[in-house]
Image 1: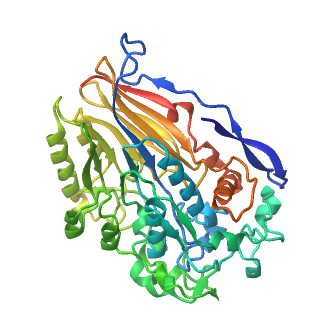
Image 2 (image 1 turned 30 degrees about the vertical axis):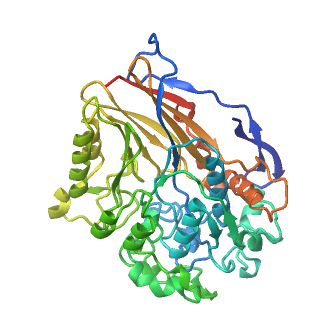
Image 3 (image 1 turned 90 degrees about the vertical axis):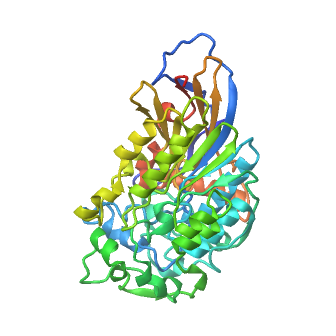
Length: 499
């Protein structure tokens, strides 16, 4: 399987050139010996327990939604009062995100997979039309986000801060050499058909699935705006912009100058109950619907159990935590799975341990009800059957070894997003070696759209290729080009001691 590398420049900008992508050499699998010696006689082959796919941070987005803070990125990105809340709100490739997801799902559909674990931020702004599109992308069907695109990438909005694919000047063309693609807005907005994944898949809730902009729990104050006929285009005068306002009083940020847009009733915010109901059969059960819980257990094959966690923080902010009720459920599940005859256990959550210390809105007398990264990780490490923790949220490939009290431990595997470069998913083969050791083999998956745009953009496959090319060239996110991780975070054999 080839890699993707920057190719020849297609356009020049004052900051850097815009480059197409090209196929590169295949990347071999390396081995990591965090827990075991490097050379063990008898190692090799082994019995495969299961092959998992890991798909995360799709961010299927309605880019023209009136309830998006794309306009706040202009003045708020990088400013301390925003704390990073609007650093990544607008993406030049966002119109094409659903096409990239379509291409990845079609690629995974052709691979031998026992179950696909989808770890949240499946949609971008908690809206029902985004939810409909995301489920159609996974289960097959027509994908339609809005009747047409009405937003700042249109040339008649006359705002050169955004990339506008039609002819004319803008900041992205000047600074980063972005291309012109006349008619792209209409092509990107047209409905299309997605093929189903065709494998069992498990859902997981992320902060963008539940919160406005992935941060604010203020849907009630913006219900009329999101479905209505006006889209804000700048922050209001006299309102303190920043993270505190977004979390506590988000409607104030949307009260500035606006433009008329067609009203779209399907943009209504999805409730937590609706999200759970629409995921029934994908790990979620009627018990989740009755109790409102977002965590569940699933046995995809004999000898393997996947425990999907809900790490969302109800008061808001994008990082995670867990309540003690869920932690008790996790302890009970691990007790049932424990012992040498128990199944291997994979944990799945949206948040990684690096982002599970959210204390926003938690009063001192409520602190005891919340569990954070250290406590959850310690619980997992007490069970030697837990070998893997899959998560996302950070839009980057990372593999971290966590050491347990008895000399073993688990690997935490974080996978990059679909919406940003490198737009990848991951396969993980779980096997038991003849030595009794457990081997986790990670293989990065690029979706099958061509490396470079080479055909008619009316073809969704070509739109997926353009999405990835734009994501690589997004100068605002140049640091994201490290999101592919090191060679030790991608194609790698991970060994754990025998139980």
